[in-house]
Image (cartoon, rainbow, N blue to C red):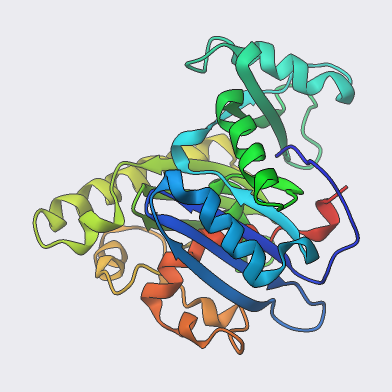
Length: 312
């Protein structure tokens, strides 16, 4: 997403997610010789209109000025679309993509903040029909968010989206030369991604929440919906990106939900449950050894894994 600043900072990235029921934060330090270390996770309860007070407390507790800081947008605060890349010079790409989006988003392009991410093509593929991901968010969402952080004395270096946060975790699990599908759930719904070579190739939302999966009523019906959506999405992906072989589906931590067995019995690819302790160091945050806490912080941790080299 759009970058807003750069300064000499402490090792590690601070990612913050503002939810309807509070604020979550995580600091993760990437290391060249070991798993990324989760230095701290924090939560502040409160309604969304109380986020300013929570951010001020967070700033006081962790001295946020020491870190590169990202804010993670909620699912309903932006739209992510895959579009054909216009044949224009790189410096004109964002503007040209904006014109392509004018009939695809539900608000005027003039009122949008737009970012573009490349979707790498197959080796030796034609430059024509190149695809890009376009992110569009209302200025009426982005500008108040920036002011909220500024009022709390927290300098944002980036605004991130959930698909890229999940991509950051998925990329660490990819078998060499093969793609990886990942499925996560939270209180907003489900998110399916496919990554290959550390890049995002597919993102699909599912209208099934973690709360629904944890309930007893109609659980099997939800499992059926999820399975059907997975089959359709993976079949579509195979047709669109035939040069990528998806090795497996990894199910993100879900706090003990019994979805894994159902998907293993009904999908044609292997299904694995993810324990984040296998890819992240929780020495400083032992509470994250609990799967329910991993589920709670999953996307916030993914946002905190944002590559520091991308800050400019």
